[in-house]
Image 1 (cartoon, helix red, strand yellow):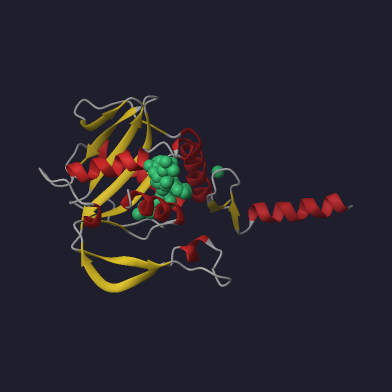
Image 2 (cartoon, rainbow, N blue to C red):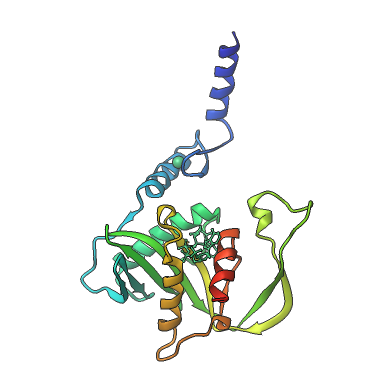
Length: 223
Ligand code: ACO
Ligand code: ZN
């Protein structure tokens, strides 16, 4: 008898309201075909990664023993832009961002880290900015909110400081983390953001960092 009750409850959860996929983390409505399709697509990309077979005209800005970094600019061919949009969609789903419009503003610079297995395993999206606000403290103590969204509400100084380059997204494929891919993406960005000039760490700013992003940024800027 108990099992039957359980079955009914499960069926209800499957068909009404939001479900969270245990492997890819996406929250979607299983009864909505559009949502379901979006989940299948995200799930596949999350597990398999995004393939990169190579482009005739690619801008390789750095090469390493385990991969290379390719720069994509707004006026590049549509296949390159589409690849960036695919990656951004995966990243935004993972970070829980709703779709951001416009998707590809004309001053954006995107770096893709391509692994030896011909997959996009890292992505950095940057744009020029004029000022940024320093993160002054982090929420601590017993009142620390536990939901992911609340953890993002860092305290910021209200005094603007000059900055040059804003990093709106930085992401590394989950199986490739802690291999210095993010570090190499930021190093490369500092080198190629402005022609002939190597950006200082205080000239770059991370927008709305996640806990992972903040740990990385703190470490990166102190070394
Ligand atoms: N916890 C603690 N320290 C960390 C972490 C972490 N999760 N990630 C990086 N660091 C520190 C470490 O000191 C590390 O050096 P070590 O491995 O020698 O100790 C150093 O930063 C350099 O790390 P990398 O290996 O270069 O970082 P990685 O390639 O793993 O990428 C990233 C870091 C991009 C934050 C990755 O964890 C990720 O994609 N997370 C999910 C997406 C995300 O939250 N992105 C940030 C959003 S904020 C924004 O986009 C502006
Ligand atoms: Zn899934």
